[in-house]
Amino acid sequence: MATGVPILDTTLQAALMSAASNVVAQSLAIYQHKDFSAIDSAAFVYFTVFALLSTPPNFLWQEWLENSFPAIKKKNVGNLDKGLVPSQKGDRLSVSNTAIKFLLDQSLGAGVNTMLFIVVMGMFKGLEWAQILDTLQRDFWQMILASYKVWPFVCLLNLVVVPFEYRMLVGNTVGFGWSVYLSLFQL
Image (tube, rainbow, N blue to C red; front, side, top):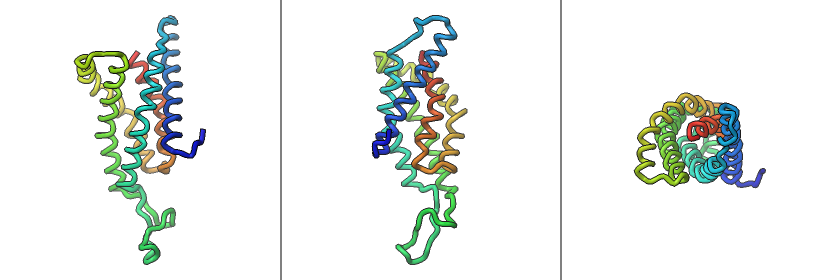
């Protein structure tokens, strides 16, 4: 699926993973209830479309975080090019930049993503604005706390171990399981 455009590749990958995770969640619901009426084709579409809508801004967010707070302090090589050469011995993890990215992603990023998920899903379901706000008030903190059981570890792993170009892939892979949870939560 390589198109040569990272944001497009990542978005398509996220949409496929979201669609697949919704199928898994619905299959679990059917198995649990022993009832095929649990099939919800609208939910399949909602989760897939949400991934298509939410992935590009998240990609840009992660790119901004990395550009603003680079993970690696490059080894200074003196006067050559005023200095910084990537992937040289002596490069080291910037603990302060990693901490800033982690805190921003797990506070602002998590909060905005959770809020948008609840609002957009409510809109997809045709809820009135007052109902969406009620859902937001009722579910926001529950979802944030549930996310903190998974995403801080993934975020830290991504920031410390995974090269930037593979971080969205790691996130999408873990997101598969997270989307199953969200699908079950929304069913």
